[in-house]
Image (cartoon, rainbow, N blue to C red):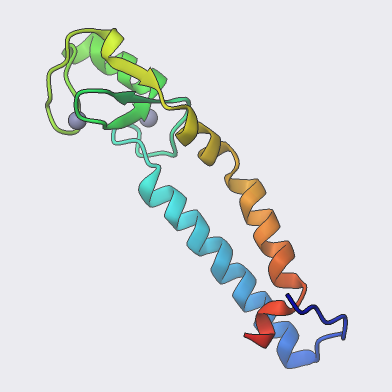
Length: 118
Ligand SMILES: [Zn+2]
Ligand SMILES: [Zn+2]
């Protein structure tokens, strides 16, 4: 890893800003598109996975849906037997909650200027 401490000139500075915002928006859309709850269309809050079909939903969303529609997956209609077929999706929750941290460290890496040498 080569790191330069030279101050970037004006055009480089612009490029860094563009690259940074592009990286953050890519990351955000990645998270939004892949970690979006089918029910509330928002990023998962305390995601749970249905073991039968592996679809994920927010804990509150799937619980509300079970009360209203029974033990059935709102995304694919797969029937499951009880709430015991739901598991907390810990890894997914960690990724979603770390999203801002990941974005911040990405910014830090990009702002070293290393990206300009690529
Ligand atoms: Zn939800
Ligand atoms: Zn499903």
